[in-house]
Length: 65
Image (cartoon, rainbow, N blue to C red; front, side):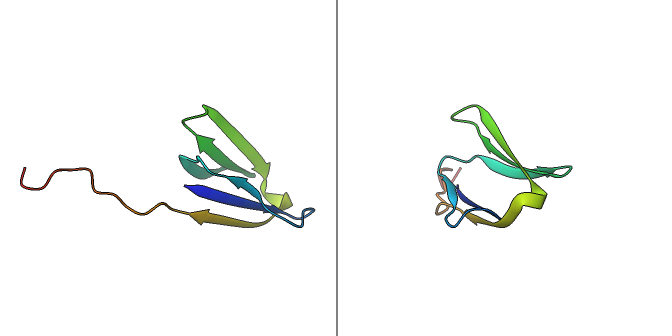
């Protein structure tokens, strides 16, 4: 998943390209990357906009089983 984080104080987004999931924990917006083994946290009060772009769905389960 690709996530763009727009902060109140920035004119362009901070882009994360290898995101596993996003979630809210209290007053924080969290971005988790399993590949990099990291969680990035932003205070919700500093966010202007969040954009999440999902990759096209790929069905990996064989048919007929």
